[in-house]
Image (cartoon, rainbow, N blue to C red; front, side, top):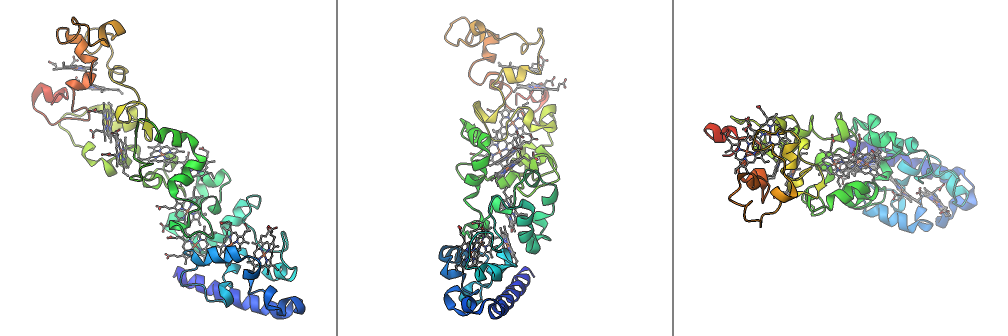
Amino acid sequence: MRKNILMLSLVAGIVALSGAGMSANSAKAAAPASGAESCKDCHADQVASFMKSRHAKGAVTGPNGTGVCLTCHGPNLTAHVAAGGGKGTGAFTFDKKADAEARAEKCLTCHGDSKHLALWESSKHRSSGLSCDSCHSGHSSLAKNLKMPQVELCFSCHKDVKAEAGRQSHHPIKEGKVSCSDCHDPHGSFNAKNLKADSVNELCYKCHAEKRGPFMNEHPPVAQDCLICHTSHGSNHNKLLNERTPSLCQTCHVGTSGHYGTPFTLARGFTPNTPTTVGTNYSSGRAVARSCLNCHAAIHGSNGPGVYGQRFAK
Ligand code: HEC
Ligand code: HEC
Ligand code: HEC
Ligand code: HEC
Ligand code: HEC
Ligand code: HEC
Ligand code: HEC
Ligand code: HEC
Ligand code: HEC
Ligand code: HEC
């Protein structure tokens, strides 16, 4: 179907171009070197790069393979050629200064009804002035016609995310095991931050299904929102945690009576080599090594029996 559209535009392109060749300034148009069908003479690099791109594969049949240029750079190429080329002489340009909407419109002529682009109109990228060619090239032979490999592309604008993804604990984005588009739809989505799921948790369950439960003993914040304890891209604490234990736990489990609520001072809690505090003092065991997790290991919920199960210790 889409191929048919491409073929149609292509045929239209060749007709328009060759028709123009006859009516325009005959001296210029007749000479093969500057003929409308021969963008190649002046734009050898763009013709060569386009020929290697996905759009050209099996689709370019015009003279010198250039008729198809009209689909994106038309409709006034005849004028451009008649003028002997040059800026502002009729060729539609994707220069960054050109109107973003008009640039997108060129692509949407063929891709407008794609389900991938259904939410483009309401996307943050569009309202921030980006256009298709901010990410895609008309002349690239990379996957999905991207200007550069995906992660590099997204990092080029989202420096903060790049910094996060470089932290000690991070989703393996740089390593190429997870890509931005596994979690976000760059073309827009119904959900906050272009997420590809109805909620943060639904997104996380796609790859961490075992955290969904159901658990006999649930830890309420887990089912509520994973990001209460975790960050999405990277963290300086282990396991993408927002904070290290025990402070993480103590943001909610506070009080002076429970064993978990007693304050952890440097003197009492974080000096494992002080003989009176390790092993012998119950409270210090909550701050060393994995802290609360030494005992409460099933922190996302437990199906363990009895009180140990209820306390996520099994
Ligand atoms: C006689 C040489 C010549 C021919 C033939 C020619 N161009 Fe150009 N074109 C130029 C020159 C020179 C420029 C200005 C380049 C610059 O300043 O960077 C240009 C600019 C462009 C631009 C950018 C326009 C702008 O306003 O910035 C596009 C797009 C373009 N050409 C496409 C084409 C296509 C498609 C064809 C074939 C139908 C074609 N050109 C044929 C010489 C030519
Ligand atoms: C912010 C960057 C960005 C912008 C802006 C953008 N895209 Fe994309 N597009 C991507 C990425 C990344 C992919 C690859 C997604 C993947 O691999 O899952 C993609 C994929 C596509 C695909 C292929 C869909 C498929 O998987 O078959 C089409 C078609 C497409 N984009 C067209 C467009 C059009 C048209 C526009 C402008 C209206 C546009 N894109 C704007 C980043 C972008
Ligand atoms: C699918 C749409 C598409 C087709 C078809 C296409 N181009 Fe482009 N062209 C672009 C986009 C988008 C850019 C902006 C730079 C980039 O993406 O690499 C561009 C850039 C250019 C430029 C640099 C001036 C500018 O506008 O930025 C020239 C010259 C050019 N193309 C010539 C051609 C020629 C010659 C053909 C035919 C062989 C062709 N293009 C086919 C989309 C297309
Ligand atoms: C004349 C129609 C037409 C125009 C104009 C057009 N495309 Fe396409 N595009 C296609 C067709 C056909 C395919 C191949 C679809 C397929 O194989 O499923 C395609 C494929 C793509 C793909 C997927 C490539 C891949 O590797 O899977 C992307 C991304 C894309 N186009 C982006 C763009 C962008 C960005 C523009 C504007 C600069 C544009 N297209 C203009 C018809 C068009
Ligand atoms: C040309 C620059 C540019 C590129 C490339 C780019 N973005 Fe963006 N992105 C922006 C701007 C500008 C905003 C809006 C301001 C902001 O929230 O930072 C934005 C916003 C976002 C948002 C937040 C959306 C919201 O609703 O708040 C997400 C998520 C996002 N981009 C993901 C991506 C992904 C994934 C890629 C790579 C496929 C990407 N971006 C590539 C510029 C870019
Ligand atoms: C494992 C899933 C996942 C991956 C992979 C991922 N993100 Fe995100 N991203 C999220 C979640 C979840 C949020 C937070 C949404 C919220 O706060 O509601 C987010 C938020 C964002 C935001 C908005 C930040 C803000 O402060 O508003 C941007 C921009 C963004 N991501 C860009 C990217 C880019 C670029 C990549 C790839 C380099 C990427 N993300 C990879 C899950 C992911
Ligand atoms: C597209 C799949 C995918 C999605 C979606 C996803 N993750 Fe991951 N996650 C991974 C992969 C892959 C790893 C690395 C696993 C490994 O190295 O064994 C990982 C690792 C983790 C780790 C351990 C990090 C470490 O340093 O060991 C945590 C915590 C995590 N993810 C939380 C989340 C949260 C929270 C969400 C939802 C916001 C989420 N993940 C969404 C794929 C995903
Ligand atoms: C109450 C805080 C909290 C919430 C909420 C939470 N986690 Fe965790 N998560 C932790 C802690 C603490 C660890 C480290 C456990 C360890 O080191 O043994 C962890 C570790 C992980 C890991 C890596 C180790 C493993 O068990 O696989 C993944 C993946 C993970 N969480 C995913 C999730 C997902 C998905 C959600 C939401 C459904 C979520 N977490 C909600 C506290 C939480
Ligand atoms: C966002 C707040 C929040 C955070 C952070 C949090 N919890 Fe909880 N936790 C709760 C709530 C709410 C309950 C349910 C309390 C109830 O049922 O009375 C609970 C229950 C528990 C229970 C079972 C207690 C009972 O009475 O059944 C244990 C054990 C526990 N949490 C340990 C931890 C540990 C260890 C951490 C740190 C890794 C942690 N929690 C982080 C909110 C939190
Ligand atoms: C040495 C093992 C151990 C460590 C370390 C530990 N706990 Fe516990 N915790 C337990 C056991 C066992 C229970 C169940 C006791 C009972 O209910 O009879 C429990 C019960 C709880 C309860 C529910 C019962 C109550 O007292 O209200 C919470 C909440 C709790 N722990 C949080 C924490 C937090 C937060 C930390 C870290 C600051 C922590 N625990 C460190 C072993 C430990």
